[in-house]
Length: 322
Length: 296
Image (cartoon, rainbow over all chains, first blue to last red; front, side):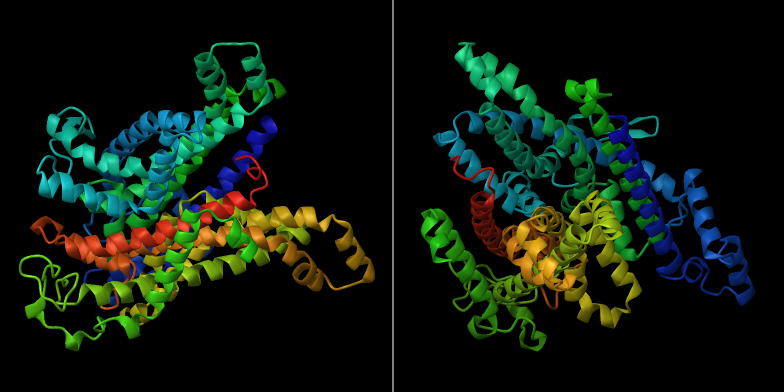
């Protein structure tokens, strides 16, 4: 297990190095930072001063090290677009995205696991066939189409739910939460469902195929031969093992969900990281783009590692080996 | 091919046919579409935002209504599907070629080449397609001057999708190449002294290609969706030369004023197309997956 963790850690470091290198290259070479940051009427001397103050006169390797050092100390630069520290912008937007992702994950697990189990227990039953068909439609429908559809039905036609923004938020320190107000919850519903649907089909299919695999294994056959009660076999013996990969995928998918939230946030004008990023892309706001990349990269690496450790904790076989 | 066709259940056959018809129709858009939506001079703003012909206020010549610039939606969807499918197929072709070649090299040559290719794949796979694609498309837009970037957009989109998708092919091909490379026929041609390149492409490739073709079918659906998403987010095809995603993006701005058709018809086209390809790809995957074969 230690060896496996070591390999994982090496990969994590490799990913982070790549990500910082890409972020650095973006900052250094995409657009001229001096030209973008200097005032329109800046003199040559002023520009040179800015160049030196940004450390752009030094060798590239040193610049890269400085860049990594600055990031490590929490300085992510200043947004070109609204002239504010990028770190502040990210912190301001982070709660909105994390709450959205949390709601989507809970929703997709709460629906995906039972639906997956149903379609695995009777793979040729009517319910399973309907679930399969719907899930195929689910993976064929892009997130933004789902979102627009929900807005058309629930916001435009039925006028039941808000279609944009977070509603009323409550400040808990620097964290602005939508969980503590009715309008916050109402605003979370449509984007939460939209983001969850993409995830739901994945979890459902995974639970289904894992359950089918486990149910045909010898120990389940043996348990059946012993005449153990069926719910005990299905939920206590089979589902537990089938959920292993689901834990992994759900963990890993949280990273994907944060990235995928870009689309949902655009559709619902949700003031999270994704909307910040897509606006930054539109304005070629490189510090924000590279900071987002760094943040998401870090989240991915952390999640990957945490999931691996969890995996080892849940699966006794992996623990014994160490 | 015919043997495969005979094994297909009816639903899969119909999906395959539907996908083929949609692809061919889209390819023939310039001959089938009533108007050319890219010819801005032919547009009349007086015709803008007309509803479909069966609704009050609809006009007979615009079956599905018009968009905000007075473009006939039928034509716009036909041309848009052509752009979407074209980019999707090009992205699949590029990523499959790259992935198969790199997978062969990783699996057969091994050593440093294998390590570099595999690690690069690992790093890329730790990011979702959409994020990488957005990054590539975003950077390309920043680097290229405005005028060039419009003409280059399809190429950028293809690259942005392929940069992620090749890994899947490479991993699969690498795995099968490792198995094939240890077999007697490969040892035999090696003893004869054939050059490595010839062994890889003439002898191993034919035996590892079919899983790659299955992945390609499934990835076509994915590539079309990614392109649509990028265009919807505003980093894809411009409104003057729209793909299905661009049309939905345009339509999205009008959803709130009750003008639903601009977004809904392209969206339905997109979903039906992707669904048809997915049903076919799903079946092919189950068919070629030895683990699943013979079980159901």
